[in-house]
Amino acid sequence: NNYWSSRVAGSGRKQFVSVYIGKAGKEFRVNVQAMILERFGVLRPIHDRLRVTVLMVQPDRRSRDVDNILKATLDSLTHARVWEDDSQVDDLRVIRGRVQSPGWLEVTIDVIPAGERQLELTP
Image (cartoon, rainbow, N blue to C red):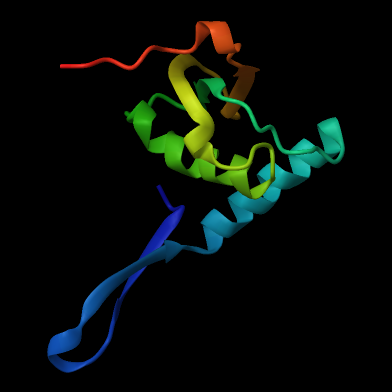
């Protein structure tokens, strides 16, 4: 919830709200990149269509929306150069795990073989 920050920018009648990655968000991205480097070493970005499963293990019983973890997680994986861009993700699933302190995310990334890719749906 503290990945994004905002501020009012501009002056007079031309003010607007600027949303940006805050200090905690930047730290999260750096931590994700460091964990990937430690576990896998330097990666070459994946160029294929992807299936991503995220297991969300919560540190406590507070109510959380599972979709709120996705943007920061996928953007951090892009920043860490796991893939070229998170627009490559065609199949995305979030699973809420048991409560266990400290909480964590477990991300599984699979390449979708060409023969399994979804057909375009027409109305």
